[in-house]
Structure formats: structure tokens, C-alpha cells
Length: 225
Ligand code: DC
Image (cartoon, rainbow, N blue to C red; front, side):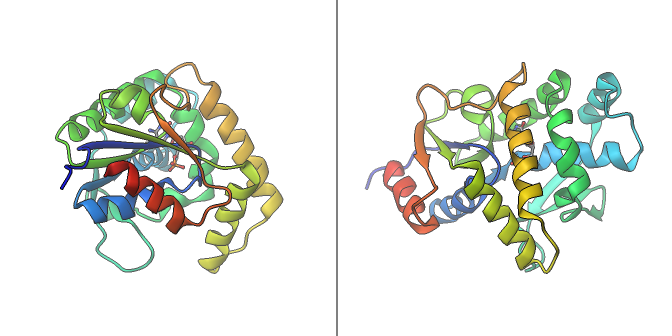
């Protein structure tokens, strides 16, 4: 039997299928699934909770350096991939709020925030047997990864997925608004000066517009074997 790659990175824009595919792949291989977007969301959430000035890069960077963000296996069966804890407070669903969504691209563009969080991510990733998901994992955090995958899909398809997710949770959603915000976030993520969203030169790019999640998973699994 061939040994699967130990460090696997999965990058791509919001709602391109990274979490679904990454989690399934980690389960299949018995690897750790690590969604790095949660860390950027947690820092943004803390800043909002403390009424910090989101334009104060220095203060937000200092907070990111000391924030105790704990990510543990899911303790509830309510659609979560994992528990996100700040101290002993469960903030898993707060990470998904529209307030966090609206500000996370601004906060994650700060060089100091990126350095603080990507150092932690790198430490964990280098232990191996990991599927790490994000925007810059193959390019910056773990450039030595054994397998790099970049998932992509049109903004329209990704907005539709987000819309369906919100409706499935029993909440209200406006497709046009989601699409507009998705395009704005893509623009900020891919044009920022530090670690912009882009595929690594040696990444395998998979478009997820047409194939089902199952078909994409089979394709990714084939790459591992
Ligand atoms: O994957 P997500 O939607 O949870 O990511 C939230 C934000 O965090 C997204 O706007 C970009 C940022 N992010 C990043 O800059 N680098 C990463 N490795 C992961 C996420």
C-alpha cells in the first residue's frame, strides 16, 4: 500500500468546498483536520467583543499574539466541525456571525496578525498527518507540504452554497447580498499585500462548480494514493 502524503494543504476562496472535503479527507486518512479560517474569525470576534478599533493594526496584532484560541473535537451534534473555545466559553457559532464575516478580511490582512497566527499554524502542521485548510497554507504556512490542493468555484455557485447553508439553519438570507459580500471578500483576500489568496505554483487546482462533493472527494483521494 502506498503511504499517503503527510502534510496536505487545501486552499481556496470562501465556500469552495474546503471544509467539507478537508474534513472528509482527514477522517478517511485518520489525520488532524485544521481549519485556519477559524483563527482569523476568532481574533476578529474578540476585537468586536472588546469594541476595539478595527483599524488599529498594532492593538489587534498584540491581541492576536496573546489570544488563547482553543480548537477541540466537536462536543455537540449541531452541524459544527469542531468546538471553538475562548477560555472556557464556547464561541463556535459566534465565529459565523455576519458581524465577523463583514470584518474578518480587514483583520486578516494585517501582517502582524498573519505572522502570529501562521506561526502557530505552522507549528501544528509540521507535526504531520494533517489536512490544513485556508487561503495561504500551500504558499506561506507550509510551502514544503507533500500535497497541495486548490479548490475553486464561481462566486455565484459559492454564494448559492452559503445561501443554502443559512436557510438550512432556519435563518433568513438574501442571495444577492451574499453574492456581493462574497465578491468583496474575494477581492480583499486576493489583493492584500501579505499572503494573498492564490494557488501555489505546485498546487493541483480543482474546480468544484459542476462535480458533486462526492466526486471532488474521490478526485482528492486519488491524489493521495
Ligand atoms: O475560510 P473562512 O471563510 O473561514 O476564512 C475567514 C477569513 O479568514 C477569510 O476572509 C480569509 C481569512 N483567512 C486567511 O486570510 N488565511 C487563512 N489561512 C484562512 C482564512
